[in-house]
Image (tube, rainbow, N blue to C red; front, top):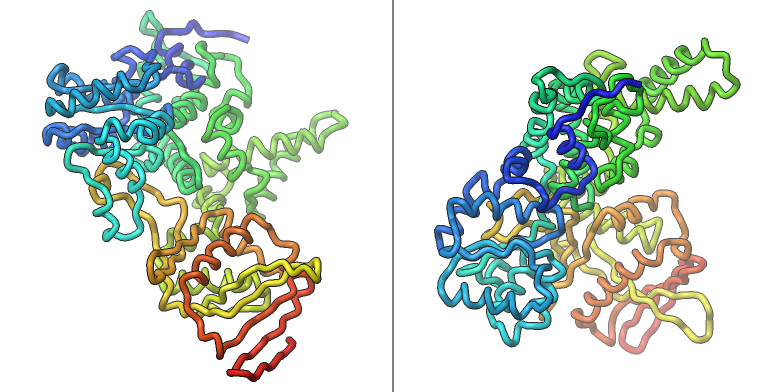
Length: 519
């Protein structure tokens, strides 16, 4: 096996593939991988600094917080501006908070990078001594709102908190920049100016191809629709690994294992985990494509004199399927994206499609009603159930005396607070069914897990066999509704259901007269 001589650039690319770069990069390397986002590309940070504000960038390691400070600092230098690149350097947060308070008192704008854990600890433990933390905490808690009327809950006059946990970086613009940065021709040059050959050259050339590039972008955009936080570091780690396989030297005599479409499913990190969980070739099927790929694999293996040919065909089939994701090599004009766009379809259909709110709301109400009564298809009113354990019997009974008309329920989609809406792209990972009571609002959070549970009830699964975590979520929502409702004690109808058998009894009350009906 031949090995090309490596260069500093290839070692740098290999470090990105291993995910271990963070603050150790040189300024030149940072410029090489910098991805312009809405924070800096559309002037949000610059405008905030020029307005005299302090920007608090919070989130997880790898979100690019320090990168933004290093990008902005040359044009907004210390000591006129205040910067904090790493709150974890402080053993005692009061020292940091004293410096922060001093900067506020002296009207010094700036940027502070603080991971969400330390920020939560500061605002929880030190707000009494440092009152400005109340403003920080209020913004931290109101990053996401369901209605613009909630926007008044936070004050953004002097401090702006931006939680990068809410940012979707898997947009076409960002992914394209990342690919272009990491497939630069400078990575294909040796120190003497001659071209690099081998697997790295092969993978860079492939990622420069428009069709491959577009399919990678589409696939990663689909990953961005999932309920998971992906950082800038995750994206760079993924692409660099697809190019290098974490090797700092380009292997000239290489096999399938070092080709980008196999590397995309063999690395370690957030995107790799999501691809293998939701987009594994064995799980996403298409009758024609799969049969064609399997036949090709069988034909390729058939000439071999080996006993375990089925395993070989299967391995080759998976490799061909992975390649197909990015190269559409099987049939002309077939779009590989069609294979994976239906992932979590039920939830994405509710969350993302341009449908009237009333239509989605009826679907959600019908699904919830069906959870408790599998034969129900009612979407106009939400029946509210309460659980009681009766001492005289071991089985669980459910009681209902309330129906909420759909007009009293709202379906809400979360969005960023107006003050930070221009700072980043946001892809909501849930929506809510909302009931507005006399004193407060009650919301049921509908995420992929709950949506999947509710959407899987067509099999008429008995209530007693259903997941208890989702049951508790639904019953707590209904208990809050019931608490806010008022009832006529002399008139009404009570539904009583045996959760074990599904038997239903309906008790009608009219003054002193009671009537029981069994269904």
